Image (cartoon, rainbow, N blue to C red; front, side, top):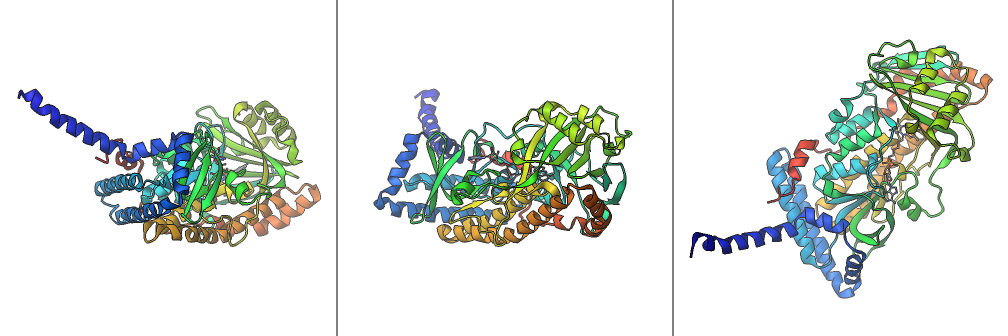
Length: 530
Ligand SMILES: Cc1cc2nc3c(=O)[nH]c(=O)nc-3n(C[C@H](O)[C@H](O)[C@H](O)COP(=O)(O)OP(=O)(O)OC[C@H]3O[C@@H](n4cnc5c(N)ncnc54)[C@H](O)[C@@H]3O)c2cc1C
């Protein structure tokens, strides 16, 4: 035999083994899941519904338990970065092999719908805890656009836990002081954030698109599928699974379904038919981000000042501004009006015009013309403000299905807490799911874990929702004599520096160390499981 001929069989065997491993890898598994044809999906359903196969599915779930407990063991050793990565990859490989061998595959442990701050935060949390999940989004990409979101200390604690805070905060200026003034240019109060109890405090506005980009860096690409809307689901209690129906006729079988699909949530609609997504609070918000020229850091207007969170109150109208960075300034205007007004003239130029008209006559020191003239019309948005008051004990889910973020609890934006609360939810839910999927009989523990999460969040969400509603009620009062009483009597009582930020305290329970994005990339490299 020549040297070449001797090597050929060995090469063919090695190539065969390589392809075998690749075919059972989690990368290919996830790819298959999101690209399954309806026929393949219905074949899975058919196999599953046959009574004789129930045992096989049970076996698959039991094996899932042992594989998940492998992930739990892995958590203990996560500080040794490369060892953890290798163990996690071996666990995932074993998961894929187990699933294929069962003949009745569970497609994923946790299915999350919605690439918003809440859904992606949960994905990032499950990633660092070594739990199997898939994230599906109905749009073709994460939502871009010109809106920004204000994050207080609790949101930063969540981002720190997820290992992305530094990447998010580096482009944005920190808030240091709150100033409340009147439309006539009078300053009602001003205090530093550090004078508020519970510090140190952190506040910055960040572009929503930046936030999602940074969070998605710790979520491997193969775990996210775009152009996949959740259309329906049914729970199979015998088998202990939820079968989710996606657009394109596909189905996904999972142990838990988490609806993080925003205020108009499909999952919420299906869980609570007939319940409104949100109750209108009586006012609209127009928001935009002004683009300022470089070097304009000491401008003539109060509102351009670095580090100052400005709130300007009129009768039934409010202006809020914050200098996000040297070249960007976030602003919002709220005004009372009927709900159906939104949508009639929602092109950016008309919205800027509407903002000008409701702020007409306000003191020049607020720099309103300068701000509105510097705002690109295409990035201006209008939203009807509303909320849904949750039950104090949560209970927004059923069986193996739960809700997260705005899907569970839309709230008014008066405290700037909706997005933050969704990320808090994600960290609490991630911990509960890890405990339920990490040991023992996987099937039975999931519904209890979801109810425990809802109960744990219920009280805090109720507090945030009601406090935010009350602030909005007070701040949107429409009559000048009433606003005089508000500004001169209620303000000193309600806006006390000591209690002003009491609601922004949150520490993520049971948080494993953050997963840095570089490590995540290395860990999930295409062939790293080998
Ligand atoms: C005027 C205003 C100002 C605000 N200011 C602040 C602030 O300063 N600070 C703060 O923390 N919060 C603020 N919020 C609240 C914050 O914007 C929301 O709470 C937050 O965006 C909700 O995030 P989410 O992930 O729950 O939902 P969303 O951001 O709505 O994301 C839901 C995702 O689910 C997708 N989806 C929908 N249906 C389906 C489906 N059937 N299948 C698959 N995917 C689906 C959507 O396309 C979307 O990508 C403000 C809100 C408003 C209106």
